Length: 229
Length: 385
Image 1 (tube, rainbow over the protein chains, first blue to last red):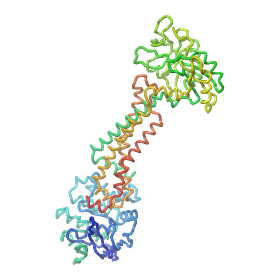
Image 2: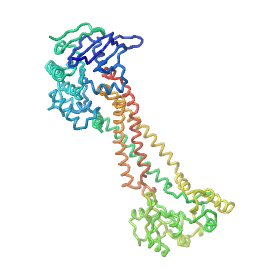
Image 3: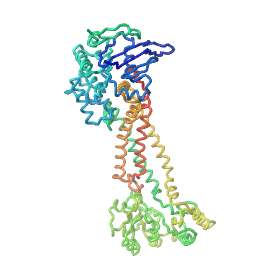
Image 4: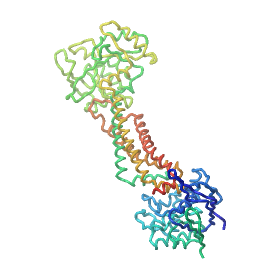
């Protein structure tokens, strides 16, 4: 399979007053199309920062980030936003659904950025909700959904515009084991059956076991690699 | 349009806060509607006053009278097309609260001077034939339920009759309509010859003259010529455009325009702070959500548009309803003073100004919070959440 994500010599520094904090240092990474990759490591090791760089939410201090052959680290803000809308779906630990919108309306949000008309958007929303098995809860507001359901709605939102890359930041971190397993099963299916490339940050070794490959980060460097049997 | 449900949903997030903000804007625009109607009414038709008309009054004061004989001399001044006169009668109909203007005039001359007063030929003829005849505006007739043939007694406060009587009885022989919405249709006009013959004092004297000039461009020169003609006479004159005359009349109670502008300025500044604070709070509370939208691919400009759109929606809701109610109060309720403001309506330019202020308020209130939202870095916004 071809490489979808390539990071070469990526470093990220943050300034805190006069102090410079090196969060990532000369990191190289390649992720294949359709691969389900888990990123593990202690807090502050740079997992989320790496996810942000790959998702075009932040820019590296040094190095190159390429996704699907497009170098994204030097794209202007406006183009980067358009690129994200087309190519990336985000899944957050705390779901980050808009509380004032129903599950269906939340899923529709990224589609508002596409030229699709209302009918086509509704069709796409229905498909995304079907993939995460949430069709019957489409008209419920986030407060009316369980944590697992909210996260499934979050995943539906991430895949609504059919991106090739899904970035999940501790998607099971706020869920019980059963709901977490359901979410992981959906992510696994998205990779195996729908060819989505998934990069998941997690603290949970059991969650990481569901991935095709696990990378361990420590102090901004990749220190270990495990490949699923 | 596809973002409307998102804007609307955001407004419902903190219902109490939204309702209070909308209400405060609503009240401000009701006030705006009423004040502009009052200001326009205080102009007493300045906007419809003819540019080609001049008013000649006594140089000392408006209450000093001028000789009736000046009319022919004024008509001889170069540039004067026509001249006529009127006098303040100041009578009371039934109750001192029933306030409206009454003028003894020369019927044909007056109607020629004010073509915006529309009266049928039959009524004109009836007025010529009836010495005690009076022509009243449609608004005044409707207010007091007068119809043709009615006798209307007016109690004089200034003009006592020769026989000592204060009661002047007139026959309604005509009801005029205004040619435009702003035309004063609350005047009570009656014949000068009857008035002059019956009054007990100042016979042969009138209150002021109205002049129509041949060329409005030469109005200033004509005014100067008229005043020069009566310089050093017993009754020197002061000639100005009708507009200036009416404005001077209105300014007797102060500079209404400035007072209104000051009140409205204070109100709108306060409302701007209220609405701006609402939007600033809304953006602060939603930092993480805005970060999520940006992560999805919303550009900074789109996020700015969403915040400004929300602010404008609040303003349009409150301001639109306020303008609508204000307009209804002014239009359907009419003059709240019972006659002191004969022209009481919201002119179209003021309605347009109100609508523009609604949008401006929305834009200004949302500007700063929207800029903050626009500048938000996605990673920072998500981290802050």
